[in-house]
Each structure stands twice: as C-alpha cells, then as structure tokens.
Image (cartoon, rainbow, N blue to C red; front, side, top):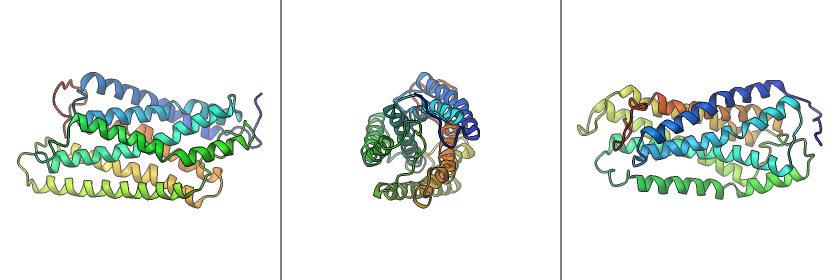
Length: 280
C-alpha cells in the first residue's frame, strides 16, 4: 500500500528531475545510436564514448521513479526496487566520472604523444579499460550498497529517497579522494594539451580545430567542478538527506552535459567513419 511521506510531495524536485530526464534520455539515446551506427568501435575514442553514453542512459532510466516519488510523496514499489534505483543512480555517477577522465587521457595521448601511444590506443585496450572501470565501480560500491539496503529495511517503505546519500563511511572519504585525483588528472591533461597546441612541437599531430580539441578538456573540468565535487564534498559536511539533495540535483545534470562532448567536440560526429579515429 502507498503511504504518504510526512514532508509530502516536492514538486520543485519532481520538475527538476523531470527536466533532466526529458533532456538527458533522448540526448544520450541519440548519441549512442550515432556512435554505434556511424563510428567504428575499433576506435578507442568511440569505445570510451559508447560506454559513457551507456552509463548516462542507465542514470537517466533511474529518474522516472524519482520523479514520481517527488511528485506524489509515495513509493509504489518494494524496498528492493528502491534499492536498485538508488544503486543505478549512484553507480553511474561514479562510472561517468571515470569515463570522462579516461577520455581526457586518451585525447592527451592522441595529441601530445600520437606516435608513441599508438600501440596503447587500440580498441582491444580500450575495451579492457572499460571493463576494468565497470568492475572497479562495482567493487568499490559494496560497502555503501550494504549500508543503503540496511537503512532502507529499517525505514518505512514509502520513504525511498529520504536517506538518499545520507550514509557516511570510510568509502565516502575514499571516493572524494578519487574525485580529487581525477580532477587533478583532467587539469594536467588540459594543461599539457594546451601547451602542445600552442607550441606546435609535434608536426605529426594533425589538429584541424584547436577550439574543438580544447573544448572536451574544458567541459570535463566544468563537469567535475560543478557536478561531481560538490556532491562528494556535501556527503562529508552535510548531515541530512535534505541538505544533500541539491548536490544530487547538480550531479544529475552531468547526464545532460556529457552528450556535448560528442556533439561539439568532434567535427565529424555526424559523419560515418569506418576505420578512422574520432577527430581531435
């Protein structure tokens, strides 16, 4: 039976997540379709971006029930279903951050070390790296997943998102450290690529548009600073789910920003590429 929360419906949050769903789901679905149809998965760039699009799609499909919950103040399904929705949301926030970082590293190798990195930048290695990222996300989520499930079992079924993110543990500190490390990697990649493009030290690096090349790095930094770091910083300093909720909203915006990496960073995104790597 559906039960109404003491706080009641929260239409502002329902509207916000509804907008994220309306924008993020079609954008990522179209992005994935274009990447699979028009770009060879023999390209490491395409492999990483396909996995990023899948990660964002998984996040997006977790949003309809979140919208329903905030719109009505009720949770219509079981505790297990709530746990799976929360799990889907949080795990794909982490995987998105990891894929964004590895895309930046891949672009760094392509621009700064195009010849020396050729043996590293293969589709086989890209698939192995993608598999390791998914395994890492699953392995590092065990403790929080157990805590979430215990918390949900100890509360009323109707309060599915009431304790969303309100779980502090040593894993939370490690995840913040990981986010800071990935931000540092993105900053280093941005600086090195910018320096290389300005100096033109390597004539074999074929760069058609410096602005497009730099855009992917700038956008990666923006997503870390705006979407990811506030969330994990908030998990450490905030004490209630109500205080953490705005940071969860910011993190979900990443689902809508990631497609811009495909649409605006690459000249030939809409063009069919059977054997060539993505530009940039």
